[in-house]
Amino acid sequence: MRGFLLDPFRFGYMQRALIEVVLLGVLAGTCSVYVLLRRSAFASDVLTHTIFPGVVLAFLVGQPLFLGALVFGLLSAVVLSVATRALGADDDVVLGVMLGSFFSVGVVIVSRTTGYANDLTALLFGRVLAVDRAEIVVTAVVTMTVVGTLALLHKELVLRAFDPVGVEALGYRPVLLDLALNVMVALVVVAAVKAVGTVLVIALLITPAAAARMVCQRLGPMFAVSCAVAVVCGWLGLAVSYDVSINHGVRAASGASIVVVLTAAFVLLAALGAAARALAARSSPPVTTPA
Amino acid sequence: MAFADPSDPSDPSGPLALHVDGISVRYGRHPAVENVTLELSQGSAMALIGPNGAGKSTLLRAVLGLVPLAGGSVSVLGHLAAEARPQVAYVPQADALDPQFPVSALQVVLMGRYRRVGWIRRPGRSDREAAVAALGRVGLDDRAGLRFGALSAGQRQRVLLARAIAQGSRLLLLDEPFNGVDATTSNLVVEVLSELRAEGAAVLMSTHDLSVAHLTCGEACLLNRRQVAVGPIDATLTPDLLAAAYGPQAVALAGGATVVTTS
Image (cartoon, rainbow over all chains, first blue to last red; front, side, top):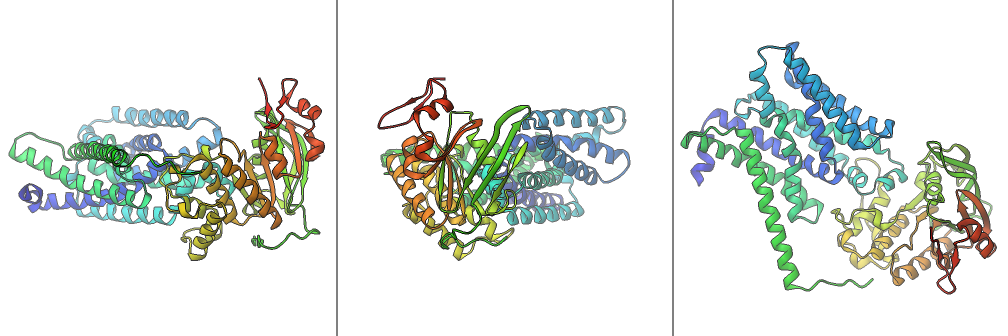
C-alpha cells in the first residue's frame, strides 16, 4: 500500500503532477463550497465551456493558452453576471444560450484549423503529467489569489447565498458579489484545465463540496473536508493511474482517474452520512424542540 | 451614514420614520402598487392588510429601495430610501430561506451586523455580544449554536427578528411575520415589537392576521394595489372597508378575526 501511494512519485514528472493536483485540491475544494452554497453548479459548468473559444484563438495567434482561457473566462463571468440582471431572463436560459454559443464558436474555429487535434485532446481531457515548473507557479498564484479573495469576501458571499433579498435589503449589490464568485470560478477553470481538461473540471468544482456536505452540517468543517477530499483524491487518482498504466498495462488517463476516485469518495461519504443519520435516528428518538 | 442609537428614545420633533408619498410601482406594464401614500412616525406601527397580490410585499420592497418607482417618493428618517437602507431592517418570511443551509442561528443573527463590521473584517466581540443579546430577547439564547434549519418554523422567524434587532435599525419591515408560527412565537413577537416601539423604532408589517394586527399596530393600511384606506387601525379595518379591499367574498371571522378569501 505504501509503495502504491509513494513509489510513483520517485519520478520528477510525477512529483510535479502531485504538486499541481495538491494545489488544485485546495483551490477547487475551497471554491466548490461557495459554488454549492450559491447553487451555481450550472453556471460553473457553463464557464468551463465558454473558455473554449479563448483557448482556440490563443492557439491560432500563438499566445499562451492560459491567456486565452483567462480572457474568455473573465469575459464570460462578466456577461453571465450582468446579462441575467439586465435581460431579466431566467438564469438557466441565459446560461444555456451562453454555453451553446461560446462553445460552437470554438468548434467552428477549430474545424477550420488543421493540426489542432493533439492539443484539443489535451484541452478536453487534460495532461497533468506534462505540467512544468512555470505552470505550477501559475497554479500556485491562482490558488493564493482565489482562496484569498474568497476568504476576504466570505461573510458577504455566504449572506448572498443564504438570503438573496436580505443581502440587498442590507445595502449590498448582489450582482457584484455574483460577479466576484463567477470570476473566481473562471480562474479555477482556467487553472485546472491543464490538469483535468474542460470536460472534467466541472467535477472538481462540484464533487468535493458535495461530498463534504454529506457528512458536515457546519460550514467550517465543510471547507476542511472539501479540501481534504479534493487533495487526497488528486493524490490517489495519480497513484491509481500510474499503477494501472505501468503494472497492468492499461493506459488510464490521469485526469480521468482523479475524477473517478473523486466520484468514489462522494459515494463513500454519502453512504457514511446516511449510515450516521440512520444510527443517530435509532439511538435517540427525534427530539421535539419546544417552540 | 451614522447609525442612530436604538436605545435613544424617539424625538417627537424628529423626522418621520417613514414617508411614502404617492408611490406607484410597475412590473413591466402590470401595475403592482398605485398611488399609495402613508406616514409612520417614530415609535409607531402600521399593519399592511390586503389580499394576495395586493402589493404588500412590493410596497415593502419599495421602502427598501429595491424596486424602481414609477412615481412618487419614499423617504426614511428624512433620507431617500436607497440611502437610508442601513437604518432599515427587513425581516423576511422564515420559510423563504433554505433550511438545509449550513449556518447556525447565531451566524444568521450576526448577518445583521455585517454593514457595521464592513467589508473584509470579521465580526468582533461587540458584534457577537449584540447578536447573543438579540437572541436572548427572542428567547433563543440557548439555541445559538444550533443549525438555523434545525429550528422550528416559529423559532426561525424569531431568529430573523433577532437579526433585525442586532442591526439596531430605526425602521423594521416585516413580511408576514405571523405566517405559520406557533402561539409562543406569535406572543413573543407581539411583545418584542412593542418593546422595540417603546425604544423608538417604527414598524411596518404585512399580515393576513387581523387579530395580531390589532395587538401590534396602532395604524393600518388597507391595500389592494390601490390604497383602500389608511389611518388608525379601528377606523381602517371596518367590515365595509375590508369588503372594499377583499371583495364581497371576504369574511371576517369572529374571535379569530382572520380574513378569508375564496378566490
